Image 1 (cartoon, rainbow, N blue to C red):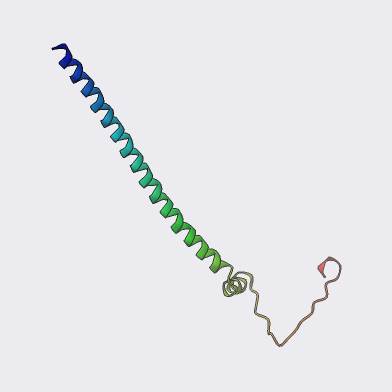
Image 2: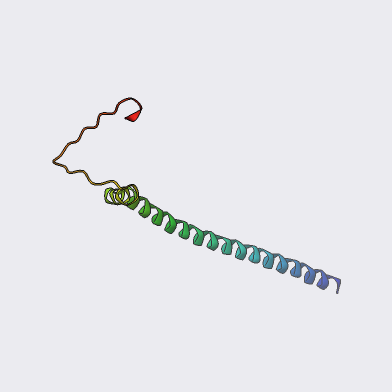
Length: 90
């Protein structure tokens, strides 16, 4: 009788250990999946930022911003203008 109880307790301890390991593995898998999703989101953000940077540094965009915000105009390519700056920018 006593031997049977020992076997039952031993089996219960082993099963508890197996369940605990399975739960730990499941948690790790869920965390890895979460990291994978986060990595995918960061890749998408990087692509978007690269696209925006490329657009912001393109010549046509820079020219548009210079015209709209700073009031600059495109120079006539057949005309050259020289500016003489004196002391103090006058």
